[in-house]
Image (cartoon, rainbow, N blue to C red; front, side, top):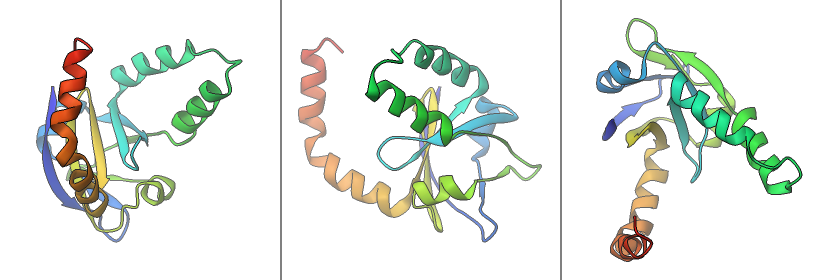
Amino acid sequence: MLMGEFLHSVDNKGRLILPAKFREEIGDSFVVTKGLDTCLFVYTKEEWSNLENKLKQLPLAKTEARAFVRFFFAGASELECDKQGRFLLPVNLREYAKLDKDVVIIGVSSRIEIWSKDVWDDYNEQIGPTVADIAENLVDLGI
């Protein structure tokens, strides 16, 4: 299971170090794509394949389904780490997630998320006061 929060920096060439703990779990190559909430999602190849199969089931006739599939797949890149544990983030993904220098890399069960530190801090300020209410609503749904 992927979990934890790590602070790293994007270097001047656009490379980022994947924490060793995550490298062990995610493997030699992985898929990075545009995520929700202005972050990037990182998947193992196996998890990406599972997600791909689910997305193929969405109804092609629905505008929202087509838009989401385009968004998700057009931004995707298969990447791998070098011997130092670094990987090169494509420019389009860095721009989408507003990754300039400081980033936060978090484990979220079956995926990794990569956030701009500023965006992550803003997100936590907004969501923090409402987490108890969110948890209560999810419990009401049986989750």
